[in-house]
Image 1 (cartoon, rainbow, N blue to C red):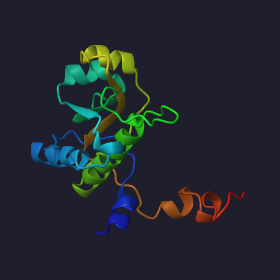
Image 2: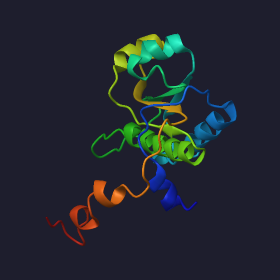
Image 3: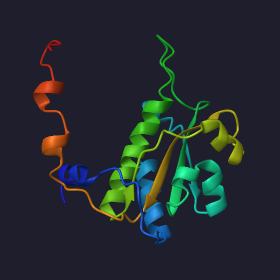
Length: 171
């Protein structure tokens, strides 16, 4: 499958089969994140893999039925900060690593959904995170109950004319 076909196949999966995810597949997903680029190669990430039902429920009761939840944390002590305006690139680097993981999960026949609607303070407390580690997103992972239509992008995405300007901004 081409990378473009893989990108089109990836979708947000919110319901999963009651089937465990193999450790070898989880390691492939985590390695995909590990090789993601980051600003100044700082790699300001830490991934906490949750398989314990009680702990998953403490972090997010909404996603506790997913076989696995990866809590994606940004380490603000190691992220690159642009000198001119002090822009912290931690969130950008984390976003790239998450994209790598979602694509790898898709390639492995797994589904996931990038989740930002959770209580980061609750997650930090449940996982005993140090102050420098911010839980930025949850990545529930499992075998999807249903598969999305790969051609949904024709009707569910904006056209290039709506999102691209050439040489200068135009509406």
